[in-house]
Image (cartoon, rainbow, N blue to C red; front, top):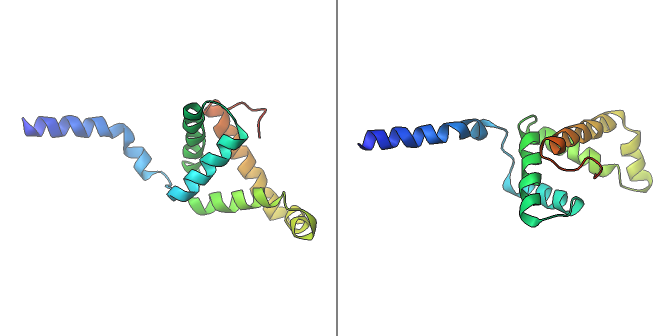
Length: 119
């Protein structure tokens, strides 16, 4: 009887096995990303928590945390004004990272049902 209960529990957990192997990001980075996403896309709290978490999960399935941070930093740095921001905007590799991040986000948001007309 105990073995059948264990087998049933293991079968129930099988669909989640891939999630454990995905690129897992630190909790703080996940929370910050979801909060930022929710600020950019107002709506029902529970709905937007779910959708924004979905976006980050889709991104995490495609890139490592290090790649994510490099792309996000390049994307965020484009909004820095003055000389410092000019360096980022003129740097081709930084532009490439920022564009890649934008494309990943756009595709993930589409898959998570977040309106495309929002940032």
